[in-house]
Image 1 (cartoon, rainbow, N blue to C red):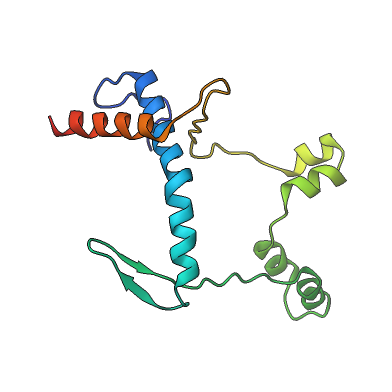
Image 2 (cartoon, rainbow, N blue to C red; image 1 turned 60 degrees about the vertical axis):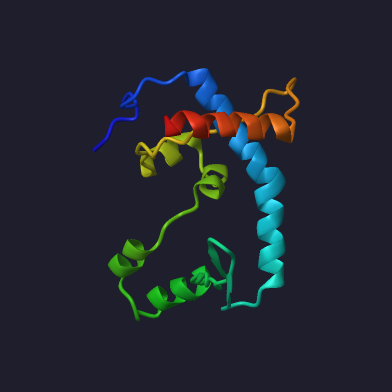
Amino acid sequence: MGSSTSKPAVEIDLGRAIDRIGFLDELWSRIGDPLRANVKGAMRLGTKAPGAWFEAHKIGGMKTVVEAEGFVRLWESGKITRAQFVATISVLVAPARELLAEGDFARISASEAATPKLTVKRLPEMTVELADAMEEVALAVREKAE
């Protein structure tokens, strides 16, 4: 299992790397997201469309939710056992925290380390021009090629 404090294999200029991530995010939010939305809107579900280098697939997803009341009724009617019921349910943390006293919540909950996430946000006083973002990304590409 990897450590969340492990160092990268290659030393990096942390500030510059953070800025480059931010520039890529800016480019994606200003150019990529609108393009993706337009392509998605132009395609029918279940279709493919070719580009010169890439292919887009518009695939549908399905989200299944088990109705809690119905599941409770199955247990109450004896169609499933209490052990089966408990083994298959999970509880939403935010509503449970609102309903329970902190001590009760702490007694019946457990926390474990999650995969660390990195968020990069533009400094409020900074204005990013697309040309600046492109220039920095191009510099990163040139450095990678060397």
